[in-house]
Structure formats: structure tokens, C-alpha cells
Amino acid sequence: MSRPNILFFCTDQQRFDTIGALGNPHVHTPTLDRLVSEGTAFRNCYCQSPICTPSRSSFMTGLYPSRVHNTRNGNDTFPTDAPPLISKLLADQGYDCGNIGKFHLTSSGKRTEPRLDDGYRYWQFSHAPRDDWESGHHYADWVKQKGGDLNAMRESDEHVPTEYHQTTWGCEKAMEFISEDRPADQPWFLTVNIYDPHPPFIPPKSYADRFDPADMPGPHFEPSDLATQEALADVDFQNELKTPEEHDAYQKQALYYAMIAQIDDQFARVLQCLEESGPKENTVVIFTSDHGETLGDHGLMYKGCRFYEGLIKVPLIIRWPDTFQADQEADGLVELLDLSATILDVAGIDIPDYFQGQSLRPILDGSQSGEHFRDSARCEYFDSLDPFFTGGTGAYGTMYRRGDYKLSVYHGKGIGELYDLKNDPWEHRNLWDSAEHASLKAELIAESFDQHVLLTTDVGSKRIAPM
Image 1 (tube, rainbow, N blue to C red):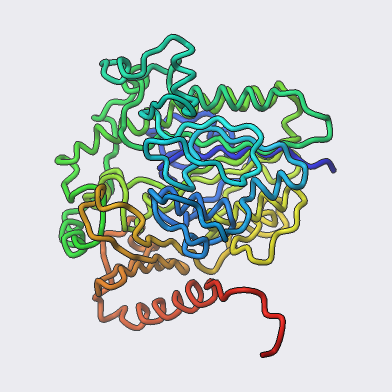
Image 2: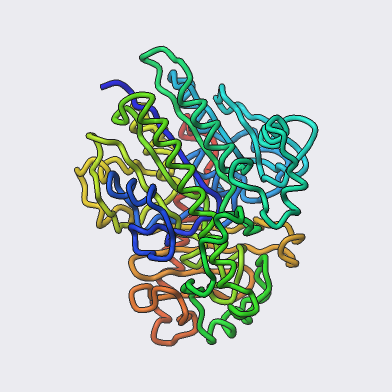
């Protein structure tokens, strides 16, 4: 069998519960709904950090962020001793590789992100749509070439319309890459990194008008959440604690869903281009996001050092017609870094022995049930956001989920959270101080240390002698 093309479409800050076919009647996602029916949807996929750079560093290398030594947003350089990116591994084996949109393995603040030895031939860069500098910001250059004025559009009541939107630019560039002439036997790998539905929540007015805040279900919030969050006040977060009304959470949810609707419409164009360029059976399509968004849950907005479901669980759908299972929902625990191993596996490339991700192919091809994959999942926050965004002094936290229980430890603070997700799926009853659950908490703390600290630590170079 010839090696497949691989389309990796990654949004930014999109929650797992934002797909109509997977149970949300308030969103409009016909394209993603179709992808669910044609592929496998993983319902319990956890990212490895609730922050962009560490999460992206993780799934691009197959390692946890702390193992890559890249746990912060805003970092100057990517570690020189980091292993090759998966794009480089694919390029070295003959794949034609392209990247569109943000990359964010290093800081993009007021600069075009420095290129790494990334293997990408095709490179169209745009970190955030608000960015604009003299050269190297390809989205802003595209708008200017079309005769648009981004500053004027941003300040208008219409906001940036769809025809000038960064999401549209990203998808049109994806279509350009897909449609390029290549040797018949050369496969391609394309990463499309859309900035939306990242805040600020400002979709085009034509989309915003389609979603009425009065029709929104609102955040997962109970009054008891206020006391829980007040106890965690010393742990970094982007936005101060407020009730849903104080956050204007219903309005923000409507705008957030509007942004996702626009993504869905533009993604449809990419898939249509894919089908017109050749048999879709030749291409593996992956849809996911780097992390989620609290969106008012628990009195919080945006992101930071917390590990709630809406923030660290992401959508993951994978389709390969006639090869992978269709219309399959997998409930087992998986991690976003498992994509790195999966991508190499479907490309026919040996998975490096240092990888911490595991290939999802056994579930995808039906040789293994999707009811169970990993025994546990891990997420980490190691001083990941600058105090400019949080007002804090730096925080460190780890999440460990095993079965129905999720443990979050805020290191050096003497505080944490423990939830029974079977009986409390939206995490309103913190069992950390429950005497009834004290032995379970101790067991999970020890287990998380053994399984997700000791056994994932970089112990140095290869041993070549007994002494």
C-alpha cells in the first residue's frame, strides 16, 4: 500500500464538547459531524498542558512538555537538545511537509517565529490575527494584497469579515498546498494551525448574529465553585473569579460557538478540495485542538493552572476511508501526544524508542476495542504563563487521571483537587479533604509520581558500560 497523505488540522483553545454529533445541540458543526460518522472520535483525549507552547511541543515530539524542557509560553528558543519534530522525521522519509498558521514552539511576540530544523518546505506563518509587522506575517500580507485594512476592520462593528478572516486565509492556503503538483509516489504532511476559537471572542458579525446568548446552555457552574476557587486563589489563572453573569458567560459562549461554526464551514472547503484533488482514501484526516477553554466553568474564563475537563480535554477525530473504522466512538483514555506515534505509524515510519506517545492505530483499524487504551492520563503546568497574563508569581501543577478519578496537585501550595468523574462529571465536589477518600488520594499521589514522574524522567545518555 502506498503511504497516505496526512492532513493535521488543529484549532486553538477548542473544548472537547463543541461537536454536534457528539452531544452538543447548540453548536453548528455539520462538517465535523460528517467526519465523526466517517471516522473515529476519541471522547476522552487529554492534552499534556492547558497552555499552547508546551502542548504543541509535546505532540510535535512525542514527549511530555517537561521531558522536552519546553513548558512555558513566551520562550526565546526551542531546546537545542530536543528530539526531532515529527515533521522532520516525515520529511526525512520523503514526505512533502507544509505548515500553515501558528506554530508556537517558541515565542511569537512581535516577531515572526524563528524557523527550526522542522522539515517543512511550505511555510505560511501567522501566529495571531492581530499581528502585523513589515515582513514574515503571511496572513497580514495576504489581507493587504486583497486590498483590505485589518486595523479598520478590527475597529468596525462588523469585525473582520469571513473573506478577510485568518481562518479563511489558513484554509485557502491549505487548499493551495493540497492542489500542488507532486510526483505520484510522493505523499504529503500538512499541519493547519487555526488561531480560533482562541480569545478574544470576536467572530465576523455574520456568524455572531446566528447565535443568541439567550439560547446558550451556559457554563458548568455551581455556587460552591466560588469557595473552591477562592481556596485556589494563589494558583495562577488568566481571569479573576466571577459568576457567569459577571463574566457575561452566555454572550461569550455564543461568540465562541460562532467562531467554531466559521471554522467548520472553512474546514468543509478544505475537505472538498481534498476530494477533488484525488481519492480521499489516500489521505488520513486528523482534527483536534491544542487545549480547551474554561468558558465560565467554575467561575473561570480563559486558561491557566487548572485541569478541568473543559480546559484539558480536546476533540480528536481521525478518518482514513476504507482503512480505519467508520462511525466509531472510543471512550478509553488517550493523550494528545499519542498523535505523534500514530502519525509515524500510518506513514510506515518506525516509532523512536524514546517516544512517550502510543500509536492509536489498533483502535482505528478495529483490532483493539476503544473502550480502553491507557490506564491513566497526565497533564502538567510548569510556570507556563507569564505573570503579565495571570498576575501571579508562577505556579506548578500536575493532573493524573486513572479510571473515574482525577487528581490535581498544585505543587508547593499544599492544596489540590480530587474528583469522582463518574458521579460528578463537571467537577463541582472537591474530595481533596474528604476523610472517606484520604487513602485513595494518597494512592493516586504515589501512583502519579511513580508512573508519570519517575518513569518519564530523562535519565541522560545511553549507557554503554557497566561502570
